[in-house]
Length: 212
Image (cartoon, rainbow, N blue to C red; front, side, top):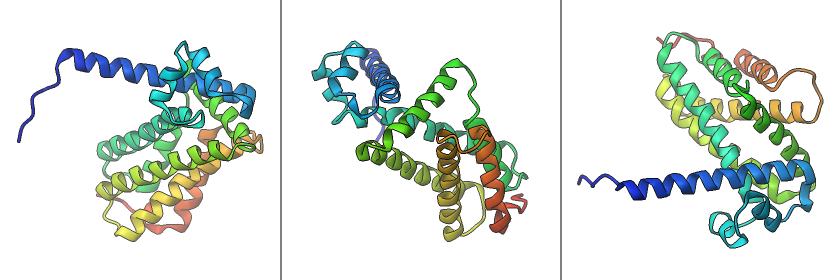
């Protein structure tokens, strides 16, 4: 049954809500990166220019406030992968994954560079904050589910191979960012992710086969 298109005021309201949510998320990430677990929900609300009551309308806890930034990265990674796979159907899946990862982890502008630095700070803060770690792992679980959906439409591999690839690819990106954030390598997150995915491709033969 068709539904009526949303009215302009409703659309504007939704855009404003999304903008407020993202601003709170950016503020939370910056504060966690700077102060760690000492940050409070009230600190985040004050720095974002909203009342604590408004903060709690959007987020249940202070740690939940960073989720939109992390899940936004998930959407970019899965969306870039789907677009590249459709544009170059003969490219082996391993190369598609590597190129999409490089693009997702290479900042396109100053704001993206800043967001990557916030991620580094968040990963440092997570060491003493289990609730913040839970948000990070939840974002990666969503990433894995998004990859399963994309991979199922871009390869003829079976369900087991698709799920294994999604889990391995998400794990590769997570490991790359965590190694970079810990200062355990001089490579960029994009370089680390590409190397990790090439290592995966060497052990998962369907990643090196032509798809069309």
